[in-house]
Image (tube, rainbow, N blue to C red):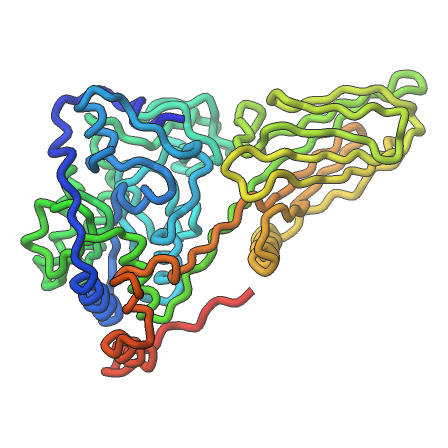
Length: 470
């Protein structure tokens, strides 16, 4: 599937320098730079990270100016490159999840992103500590009350246009707008001001996977230097800001960050994705019969697609007289007619789409039209945290839980959560020095001494915060 965002952008002839050759520091040089960066991160009092498309390429999303980047391919007349999986199923990379842990450990204060792929928010990075300069392909905003709506599907438009949905606030109801900028659009003031303020405050701005060519965003990291701070750059290509940086590393971002995390004795948490469905069961009574309808929809409304579902198998385990059916088209809907006194179980097997960490999960519903069930609302944050802990402990996806149920005389609505993916990141698989992996090998005395110094909190610097436990 092509990268929809790039295809929606208006045509522009001048997109800057593209297709520059990639550079790779030698293993020995790279190892030394990783250790130097780890010290800079540990010493920093106000670390800000500035990210570009290069931190998302390992998730299957193409960059823009690399040898096979979007602008590079378009300039060569080859069109937009394909992503390795649907945009909406892309998982945060090792770097995204490492930033989450750095923030939890108190080392990272803010992230400024030029990306629209929503991977920072999917990773669990706090929204209040994130500035998305160019918008988010999965986010809508109400222009009146400023409420943001993060979706699990890609918004249909770009360029701050109206979308098909409205604000859910009953006192508002305004038409929502997409948040992704087109070429002629100015940076959103709130995002820009917070980003500039953070760069002015930062004593270290770490630029990851960005060519630093798009203005005015590319100039923000330099605000740190004006106030006595430093800039470090990790990118495979040279950037116009390299000469002003205190440290420039030419290497894969994931490998560099994996090395830094290892030296700092910080664990890279797994990415656990949770998706939601809404079940609606309505019925009408006709003499001694009940005509009922089951609908499976997105929690965002009937018009919103369930991007993680391929099909739903509906069966009735305790009723041989009720035929099973496979629902293939969205919105998923089933109509049946049964006796008013019928009591039966309905098993829904949800078959997940490509990019999910398991093939399916199931929900069993007990149906009794003569007895109204109790309504309830569970603590969503607590339930989702328990689901993530269970998924991490079991090292598999597929767990499901009901979050709430509303029962009315002739209708029942429930919301269910499913763990649809779990991705682990093993720094041992990303050795970045020589083939023996010296930076992670006990034979490397330099790395060992640095690790001990940082973990013990020597030189007046605190040891890393304790890991979060489930």
